[in-house]
Image 1 (cartoon, rainbow, N blue to C red):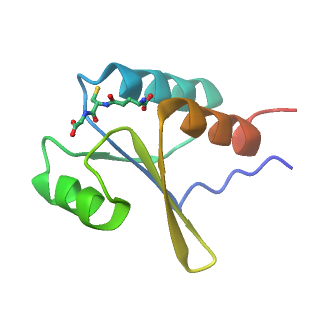
Image 2: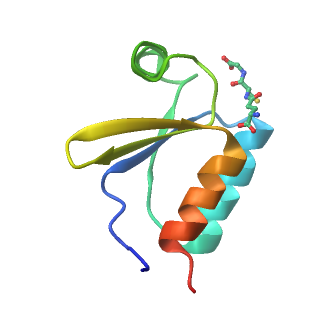
Length: 89
Ligand SMILES: N[C@@H](CCC(=O)N[C@@H](CS)C(=O)NCC(=O)O)C(=O)O
């Protein structure tokens, strides 16, 4: 089922990361609104990513669902997730 509520998603990333760019392009193509958290411009986001996600690697999609949080690393996995949840099918 197509879902439009993205309020529980945020993307940890930074501008000059090529893997982040392809995720940002997928977000744009899908026309969804996801909070972007730049880990270079905002060291507190990087710290949060390391402490809660487990590593500083970007992109990472933070998914908050039913009170629990999932930290999804890997651009291909993130794009698959977004296509599954927000793509038209
Ligand atoms: N296989 C990963 C590669 C991601 C990756 O290599 N990201 C780099 C930035 S382009 C990174 O996070 N390096 C470690 C760091 O910045 O702490 C993916 O497709 O998402």
